[in-house]
Structure formats: C-alpha cells, structure tokens
Image 1 (tube, one colour):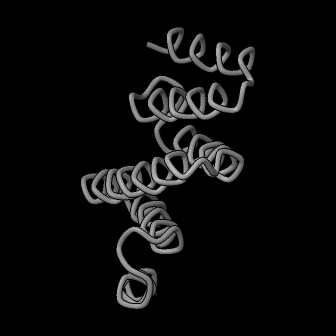
Image 2 (cartoon, one colour):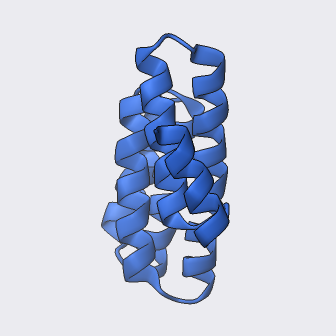
Image 3 (cartoon, one colour):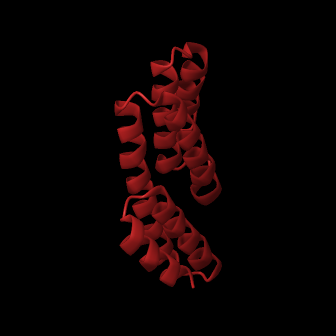
Length: 120
C-alpha cells in the first residue's frame, strides 16, 4: 500500500513534492520494521535530498517562517530515524541554524551550530 501511495503521489504531485517525500519516509519506516535496511537507507536518503531541495527553495524565496517549520520537522524525523550523531541529523541542525540566522534569531542559531559541533 505504501509503494502504491508513493507511486500515485509521484505521478500526481511530482518526486519532490512534500507529500511525496512524506510517502518516501513512510515507506522507509515500514521497511525498517521489516529489516530491509539497505532499502531503508535508500528511501531516507531520497527523502533527505528532496527535503533539502524544497527547504532550500523556500529559504531562497525569503519564506523563512515556513522554511523554519519544515526544517524543524525534518530535524525531528532525522533524529528518530538516524539518531543524534548521524551526519544527516547534523546537516538538518545546520540548515535550521541557517534559517534562524536569516530571521535574526542569532542566539538560537548559535545554539544549533553548537549542537551540530557537539554531535560531530
């Protein structure tokens, strides 16, 4: 069912639409429960790369509040899937820090950068 949902979302919305990327993540979580870890990694990498493109586009448009909300959701997901010390999680922390910095939230941005350094 998750594979069919993903295929339908890709056809209707495109490969990088947030709903499609959510379907990719959902499929990855299910595959993890089944122990299909190589396929899980591929799904999560695809979701991460797509999310980074979409989030970067929002930031370039100056839509920092929406970008911040999406970065926070992405970070939450990466922490659950990859853990606190994985490179993907650190990249999410840094991306969130950049968006916070662009909004003038310097203290929180510095906290994000420090968090990324501590997890390295």
